[in-house]
Image (tube, rainbow, N blue to C red; front, side, top):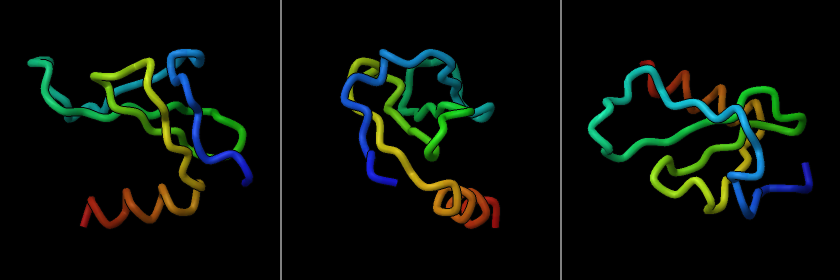
Amino acid sequence: MTERIIQDAASWSGWRKSSYSANEGGTCIEILDGYPSGVPVRDSKNPHGPAVIFSTESWSSFIATVKE
């Protein structure tokens, strides 16, 4: 994977927040499902900011660790 950042994350649609996020406007991340070269992650408070793209393997490992 050569691309690691989406400079303007708002240029892509389909972002979703975690089901564990509250609606009080606190700190949260959003992910974009179906991106062809990994899992983009952005700060929900800054939708026009950059998104970091994690490899699918790295993201899966992160999720598994969090669930433990």
